[in-house]
Length: 356
Image (cartoon, rainbow, N blue to C red):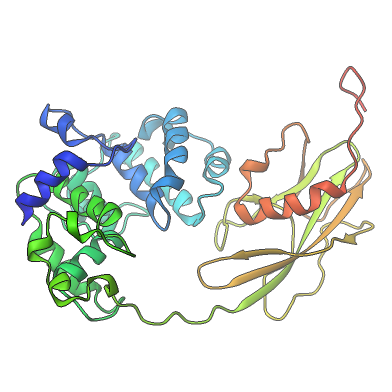
């Protein structure tokens, strides 16, 4: 079964910017552990399509783990903006600094040693060990869970089935070419054994698939019904000074969107919180609201806008010059706030020399 999967992978492996393909590996090219680790951290909770551009920008700016370790925290958080799950970016920097500072710039090769690094859990440790160092580790992401559930007709719903699916993946992991095998199973789940309408007719594992034989493959893996997400509410305050500078604040390191730049605002609670403007001003409510969904709740933000004089002194946050402001450096929910509010501010008229 693993031999058939490897043969399929040699022909159909996806071309990914962080991957050393099977032909390159056969020619002796070894994966860069830094690029493998970086891609795996980025790929958590998101898609290959979403990650490609981020990965290419990161590796252009910080081509080695030492370069990333020396980077400014704010610059890294700004480049991460839009990928979500910002604790990953904070742990990314912590891990890079441990590897660069304490380990001489070399990633450890075993799962146990990798798990000891900041932000590296069981899945990432297995992925780096297998893909970067060809260690026989069971790499189990959502694609692999789906392939195992169908291949062995596992009817137990997720997440309860995770230990069994991991054990089955470990049983199939070969000692020879485990890195190729790990990527082959993930590619199979992403391109053939897809969540809906799996292309069973072209699957290299068709002959041994118990789920297909039982006629239940498209229904696997089974999942428990999702709990209804609560709705939290808050207020975002968008203020621009008359010279074009925006009032922004860096959120605390801990908590949602930790360490990111955004608009001052209230806590996000149910019921709606009391007003808490960051500076005394003639605040005006904007029509509509910003809606955003996080893992555990839906967010509804009312947006207030104000134009501030040059001598305005906010209680929190700091002014960012309009020319230096980057919408793309904001997390997605803060971009939505910007897009709702920015059209309400009149254009800044500047003199030919750049003055007001």
